[in-house]
Length: 357
Image 1 (cartoon, rainbow, N blue to C red):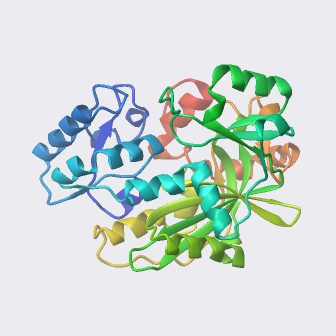
Image 2 (image 1 turned 90 degrees about the vertical axis):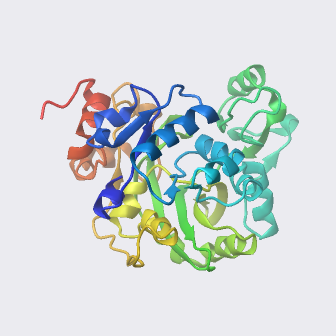
């Protein structure tokens, strides 16, 4: 939304409910309709889209591919959205799932000689390891699955008790440095790229809390992924998570959609949002993507991870807790929520109250 505002592009918001966090931002006036259900229901979303279109008539609309659940829903009902003049800026469903489903993309990477973590049979697991879902949904229950870090035997026992173990495959846990390789692949077989080193992450492999620009996208290693994505005909946004351990790189997973620490690439002037807006003709002039990374960092205080009770479980990569705490003021100046447009969200998360102004 910050990018849309800067580019003076007209946009509208469909809120998930009356307690949507968007109402705590300066963008609340852009909300035109609220969904009746937080669950994605096609009739509900069609009603909301038509409500927007009754008030604001345009020849076409672009739906932001903002989350995994939304994207899969959009692809499932793509024809219906197309009939509503709504463009879904994603590849076809089969290709999307081949990239997004962790096991399928891992097998694809192996074909292109991209190293992935060693896999274990259930009977031969070495701890720590990571249980990764073979597909986004459980085959039996239909529930959404996420990777689970297994540190001790009791974690494995809990997994086997709470889930259908056949929904998962098991990989060695890779330590070391954490990176994101970021791309936008245009339909004319070119791309823009950027990379970041992740320094702090929520416990159990949650969201990235702090990151800085990296140069991995300039490394020959990036060419392996570029060749892969060109070869399979992929276009659009994609983030590839990579770990570096003992001078070797390992592909962890890929996400063909928006990703959390987007403020970093916006501030570094490699704005993937602008690339998408240009390709879909919402910008008439191709943006400049010249990197400007001087003093650029990304930081997010989620209100829990840095408290005395929780910081021991927060994950730090290539940055110690002591170093972070000593340089806290430097990180905090880039807090992406501590801005005028989202100050209420920041205060609610960190202090449990609204911003007094």
